[in-house]
Image 1 (cartoon, rainbow, N blue to C red):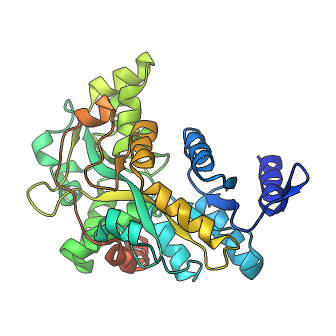
Image 2: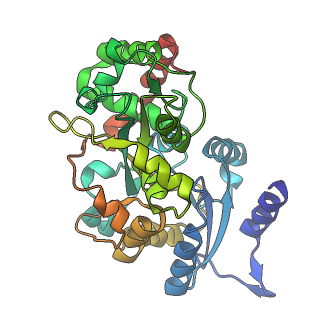
Length: 340
């Protein structure tokens, strides 16, 4: 892994390919926290369309943020990609992004899915998964219900400090207020079936196995299991049910993958072209087909039967700008509640 990172780091700073100098904005250096092999085709297609060579470094989002902070004005990176509003917010708080000035992005990405400095290009819902043998589905129709004492010893989640759950906390703050969100977090902790651990797929498996009665997970993990040809994954899907939370109130919380152009980007024109490419129909369909995510651009239809089989749902449309403003306080609320 370290060898790969070093190699990619060197590649990102090269100014020649096959002995020929690369002109300005004919290459693009991306720092990405998305670790999906299916993204390779996305970058290849961008190069095919534009002739711009893509150099990519992949690592955990916190590692990339630390790297960008240490590199400062000498950073070769043009674009930062992360898989949650919390990490994109962290990049914004470090003043790493440049303002986005693009008529294309303003026209294609809904206002609530973009900020002044970064855009969402794909969406994934934070769903509730439950075991019908252990929990009555009628009792888990909202996020707030997961804190009800009736679910004592039945709730599983990943760490409260994980970006996915921080973004959910930020959304709850916007809808029910900070005080109620803190009471909710205390209720979640009181209802734990076990201490938080693992990723979202682990929570779904825990529910199927009966270790938990109910859990929170991103939708694309659920669809990934649906699309799996492994018998054990199909057994998991058969054992659980899912809920679109808060359909009678403010809607299901939606996580995002997003990207922004970095303030010190040496190839700003190439970075702008890449961000606009992410909003193209072709790239948007790719996110749905390649990683079971919903397009950010309205009206784009993909061919993913499993994803489509989940049906339509009412989504929370709280502006990302507002969620970003709540992230830091959400972390403090979780810390006080012992949700770690």
